[in-house]
Image (cartoon, rainbow, N blue to C red; front, side):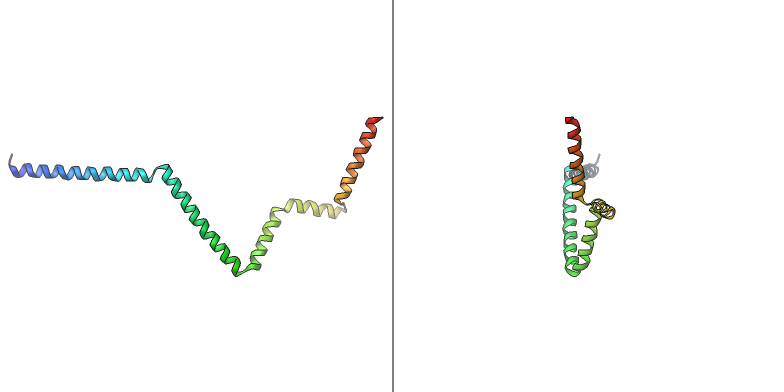
Length: 118
């Protein structure tokens, strides 16, 4: 073999070794990027950043139109408390009073105790 041929082979081997080293470094970097801990940290940071933006937008919107914000808050409160409010309205519509219910319950209890004592 000639010296030129051996030089080309050595150069090709060197280039292959460099390419292999770059590939291994890329794989290590990729492995670090897709590690569950890294992905969870990035997701947490993204959620935190997004919540800060949403909170800032909300504060700005409330400052710009406080009446609309109060209306939305009131509607949300009514939606959340709809069952107790409907029960209260139904008892009011029937003409019942909460104190009357407690009085009737106490009267029933007294009669039940009186019957047990007999």
